Amino acid sequence: MNLIGAIALGIFLLTLVASIRGWIPQRVLPIQSALLAASALIALVGILSGAPLNWGDLISYTSIHPVTATIAGFVFAGALRAAGGFEAAASLVSRVMRLKYGSPFAVMLLVNLPTIFAMPCGRIWVAPLLPVTILLGEEIARKNKDRAVPAMLVFGLVINAAASCGPSLIGGIGALGEGMGRYPAGSFSNPQSIAIVIISALVMLFVKYFYREKAPLPVRVSADAENRPVPEHGFFSLIIFIIVLGATVAFEPPVPLQTILVGLTIVVMLVEGVSINDLVGGIMLHPLTAMLSGFIAAGVLGAFGGFTVLVGLLDFAASSTPLGYAGVAVLLAYLPIIFPMPCGRILAVSLIPAVLMFGERLAEATAVPSVQPALLIAFILCAAASCGPSPLGGIGSLGRGGLRLKNFNDGLPQVLAILIGVPVAALIVVGVGVHATGVSLRMGLMALAAGVCSAAAINAVLGFRFYNPGGIAAGAAVAALLMVF
Image (cartoon, rainbow, N blue to C red; front, side, top):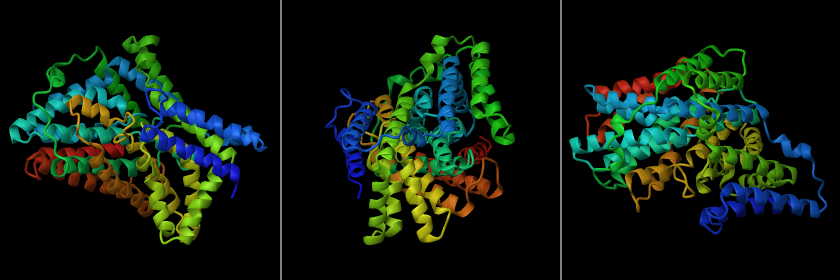
């Protein structure tokens, strides 16, 4: 075994464990800074041990296209946020609530909105949608006499938003995996989106039947949610985003996604009068720094043999223990929820090269080539969703704060839902294969089945009849929108 590689892998894993366990306080040294320090320590140990530092190895684990697409995605999301596009979407949902059968329809649409219009980070959606979600939850709670409803809706939204950065076409974690694995752009989007719809419904079910928490009523944050002002031209910027994103997915123009996003940013800024300061203020730096620290850690681990050692250990466990290749693959896919980070990019970007390497061994051992992308997409979706239950400032903390819940362990229902839902995406890849973004009949039927069944389950847990037409119609609408966007 490569001693330097083993030391590098040990330092990396120890840093993850120390951050999660609180041995490294996040208020003193955030996980991104801890990983950068660990990377510097690995490099120092390697150099002092006489290992050559090859800059080519350091950058070989970085795929430029998905990185620039991610940056462009965050810049555009910042412009859309500053222009009020997300507030406009929240306003539309609050209007739907007032229609006949509007509450079940609004719930299904609201909970899945982050995945339908997936941003590079789910936190972008949570801020404008959380007050409307609590308002809708309170309304249904009073009507159906079930005070757990607000928590059900909020944490259904939280896990959906957390996982939505996986299938996002504008710089999501899936795009990074596609680039690093040399898979067609957008090929990981639909399988993840279908699985996320199921995961969100499962979280709501687990909160109701296994982890009930009576949210206090009323909740002050939602008092004015229905009448929150939408910035001028907010609807216009939202419509531009929907039209351009839909056209990009449907027609696949021969123009790089980065160019389209930069052009959209300029249009929104000109039309909405968004200043540079507003744009910068709307950009979320946390996930960008997470991606940067992840790439640096991946580069250092690769340069000093950390990935070789990790894959060797996995291969040994697969061939010499009762786990076998299937058991080791399951452990590897679920590694992100064993070490839940505040941003899934940290662990995803750091370990995607190792997942690809082990996936290749797995494909050779099983003689099934599709298991490599299946393992990769399971790992990516698990990483994306893991920031929901993460105790290190994950998106779940926003939900607990909005509901003013102090002792509610929202991580358990989210983790259980992830455990059940992630294999759905992997099975879709094995059954259908990896294809570029586009609407196919088989994928559409699977999305429709997932949407309608999830809607029926959500209808039931909310206290409506499972066949409530509003919820079922919303399930079919969500499936259609997932295929289009």
